[in-house]
Length: 119
Image (cartoon, rainbow, N blue to C red):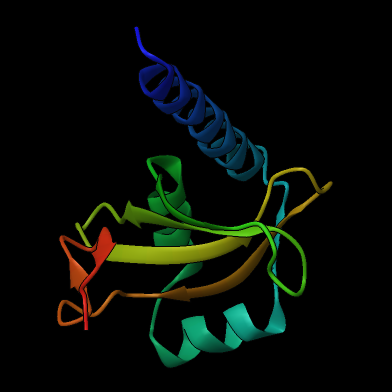
């Protein structure tokens, strides 16, 4: 196995632990919503139940290690009704996972809700 393959495997394992830790925080109800996330969920008609459903099977899309409020990431999950939901949250290193914002991704801006379309 070459160096680049080992690096890919290492990053994959790190990302899997990150997502597993995020899921655990949600499962154990160790999370809180920012005011912005609450406002956005109301405006966008996304229920707490849908967010909980989406977080159970979320996948990591992007990481923001130098975010101005602390390291965070963007995950994608689906509600039981198959509604795609993006959640930006803090890294799970805090006592409580902070939900920063939530939204339903725009198909015009995302490929399969997973990758940003090029402009």
